Image 1 (cartoon, rainbow, N blue to C red):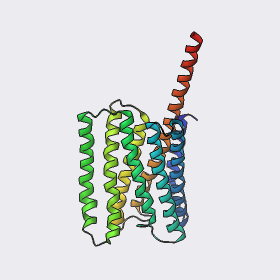
Image 2: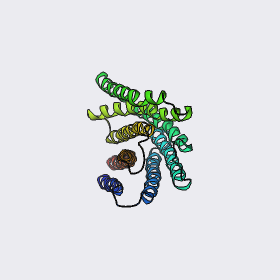
Image 3: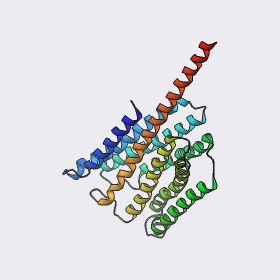
Image 4: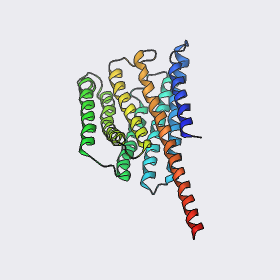
Length: 270
């Protein structure tokens, strides 16, 4: 399948998901669909990343990047599955819950993926680009600190709930800095469209996580509320992971075929 064709399919899926929120249905069917969709799309994203990993193998730096992305998405898939279980089967609001263990564990391999991406691509750390990324991250951290981190830290919530709520935006600060730096690199003519796509996926996730912490703390995140539309950002990020993984896979296969063709030409000349 052509990369562009997959892009159109993913766009249709995203628009279909958005439309589902506005259908004249009872809340429970929408809840079942939304929870199931999150788990499925996270699993599909992990499969696509694993498929790309298999091309490079675990011994290459590229392979390690895609392995880390796969592991991170597997953890997030586990979190989505547990969220669906507690919400649909147990009938309880699953935050905080064991699902958060999987969500937060997913940040570890994803942060490693960002580190490996800088390492294997030898990203040029130009002062201007680092300065822009750092400025964006500081601005994000400041806004997050004022409107999310500080209010949660001084609230009367239980210590456990406060820690869980705070860990998401704190972890996202690292991802957003790495993603911003990658976006700045590629915006200037950079190294690969794939990593621009993956960087945007990180940014979408980071923004959604921070908004969730704020909305949940204020009791605003609930089905049927306009604030519930931050779900679109998470779905968008999963679809970007799928698109980025497929784009990289097709680029790698094209490079392999070109290398084979070049070797054949050299053999014929001999």
